[in-house]
Structure formats: C-alpha cells, structure tokens
Image (tube, rainbow, N blue to C red; front, side):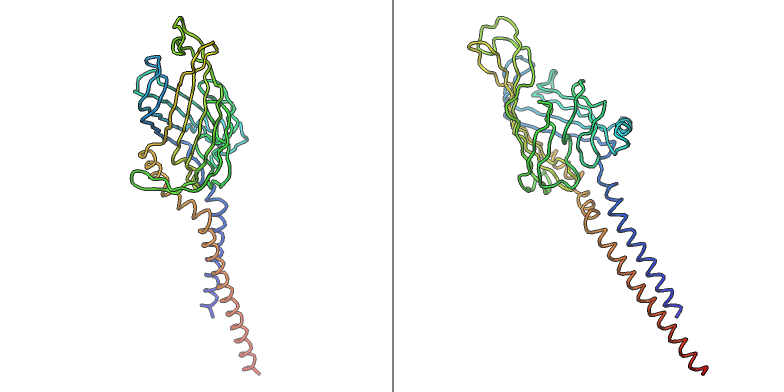
Length: 331
C-alpha cells in the first residue's frame, strides 16, 4: 500500500511541476526570448551595379555601381534613460549610420545618422527625448529596423528616413529568400512613397542645361518603391530592396530636371546569408516556445496528475478494503 501512496505523491508532484513549467514557459519565457538585444550590433549591405546618380565628387551626373552600408548599434545606457521616460517600458536605444557611395571616397552620395528608441518586442518606435535624425530632433513612427516578433499578415507603418514620415508596408505573400548557402521562409511586404519634395541642394546652374553662371538652390524630390522580406517569427528584415528615384529641379524657364538617383538597390546575397546564419536557429526555438512546447509540457503535466489521482484513488480503495477485512475478521 505504501508504494501506491508514494507513486501517487510522485506523479502528482511531477505533474504539478510540469503544468506550472508549461504555463511559465508560455507566460514568461517567450517574453524574455522575443526581445531585441540591448547591445545589438548588425550591418546590412545593399548594392546596385547599374545605378545613375549625381556624383558628389565631380559635382555632375554619373553612373555605375553603388553600395549602401547600414550599421545598427545598441546603447544599453541610453536604453535605461528611454525606459525611465516611458514608465519603465522594455525599450532599446539604437544608433543607425547609413551611407551610399560609388567609390568609398568622401563625400558620399548620401549619408544618414539616426538615434531612436524602439519597443524591444514590437520593434515599433517609442517617444524619447533623444530621438534624432542627422542631429535634428525627430518624432519617429512605425517600424525602423525590424518588424514585430510573430509578424502578422497585415500592413505595418514603416519609417521612411528621406521624407521623415511613416509609409504603409502591405503584406503581399510568402516567399523563400535565398542566400549564398541556404534559404529562409519570409513574408514579403511592399509599399511606395510618391514623388515628394524633401530638401534643397546647392548645385551648379549649368547641370540643368542653362548657362553655368553661378550656383543655385535646387529642389530635391524623391520617390521609392520599397520591398522588405521579413522572417515572421523573429521579425528580422532578411532582405530589403529599394527602387528609388531622386531628382534635382530648378524653377527657371528651360531648366531640365536632373536625375540625382535612379537605382534598384537590394541586400547582397552575403548579407542575406549572414542574416540566415544569425537568426535561422532562433526561429525554431521561438516558434516552439510560442506554440506547441508549453502545450506539450503542460499536457504531460496534466497526464501525470491524472495518473497520480488514479494511484491515490486506488490506494484509498485498497485501504478501505483492508479496513473492512480487518473488521470482518474481528467479528
């Protein structure tokens, strides 16, 4: 009889432990795994071998290969400041430096520096006094460097740094993205920025087909058809493509618009493969913890509890039977 009581206690204890573990894994473990590292340090490289651009080195239109390099670095100390401003929310602070050039010589064709705070789970921008772009305060909105963990098949707002405003990225379908030595399943999102004025640039008057008498201030316009391939479990942007056009325009009779940028730049296969290597193994772990693993462990716990109850009932019945036998023998 004692072995039955010990068995019941063992199964009930183990069952309760597994059930608690399953609940804790669902409630707590996933929230701790599905966050952007505070000290993240990553780099994306985009390229186009056949771009047209305004060559800053020669102050004239040019063509050929261009490369865009974007580096994102986390700052844990600033993250604490941003968290304090957001009532202790789980936020991270990152600096992104991005340059586009044709020959790696100063000045670059284009340069961007951003500092921003984001929610570490959703990847969405959050208010913070230190948010800036090229040294100027800015109120970021939407996704900036990633999509949410457990990305859904819906539209998301995504920050466009050129026009300093969010654009809508629509879910278009699923697609396998190839690297140099592997592939990964993604959700494909697309969105467009219509031609928009975004700044002024001083350039020689002669580039517009006019007499080259002096420098003039030309209006800069921009449009972009952007495609982003997102691994949905992690929200990481595996591949980015930007079909971007920029013009220089002068409001004078006879002035011809000048193409400042005409490119279809996309993440290089090496960049895609590096992302697959870094995040591929995390996909299965996150999905398991988010979906079937807590259910499996919790279900096993319930099964052990049922077995423990069965042992306890059997032990009780056996004990009652023994009591009855003893009473009968006494009579």
